Structures are given as C-alpha cells and as structure tokens.
Amino acid sequence: MLSKRFLMLSLALFILATTGAAGYWWANRTRPYATTSTDPRVQNAYAVARKMPQVLSQIPCLCGCMDRTKNPHASNLDCFKTEHAETCPICVITALSAERTVDQGKSIKEISRYITNVNGFDMVPELSK
Image (cartoon, rainbow, N blue to C red; front, side, top):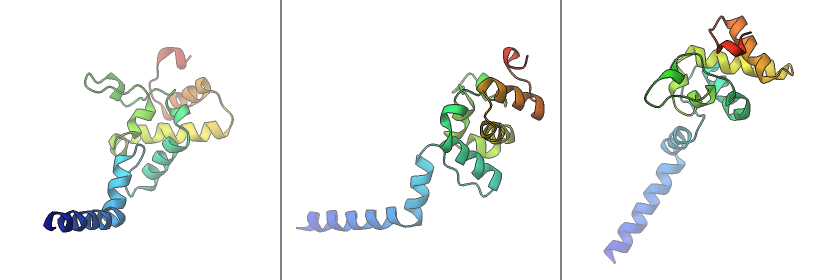
C-alpha cells in the first residue's frame, strides 16, 4: 500500500514539475533549435533554424566550428542543434542572412556567395567565385 501511494505521489509531482516553468524550460532545452537567450537576434536565428533546416544544412558555417576535431559541425544548421549559436555572432548572422536571401528567391550557391561578400566572411573557395 505504501509503495502504491509513493508511486502516485511521485507521478503527481512529476506532472506538476513538467507542466510548470521547469517543464517548459526542460522541453525547450532538450529539443533541437531551441534557445534560452533573451537576445532577439539569437531568438530569430534559432527560429530560422526551425523554419528552414533544409537550407541551413547546405550552408557551411564560417566560425571555425566545422574544423574542430571533436564534434565538428557539418553545416550552419548544426550550430543551432545546441547552445553554440547563442554565443556565436557569425552563426547568427549566417542564419539571418540565409533567411533574407531565401526570401528573395536565391539559390544555395547565391546565398553562400551573398553571405561571403556582404558579411566579409572567408568561404569555401568554390562558393566564393
């Protein structure tokens, strides 16, 4: 009888915890492309990652995270799967620039060229020609 009460109490506490502020925070931190940053640009960039992952997955990241030997990123999208982009202005600018140029109907190659030329980033040589 005691173990049944304990189980019910534990379940009730779990439900309360997951439906309150702690539950909201945990749900947003454990799903990809979520941020707890209060910076509107960072929030917008994470929203872009949620909105158009197929585009960001084709755009190289230019902050150096792709060159790391431990957990290298394959694209700009990978920066938004964790909190990495919360503190990296290059990742944020890349995502926001990609959104702006997609809205103009540009191709991936044109988007990459735009990001390189307008933001002054060094890009993969074949994309910046």
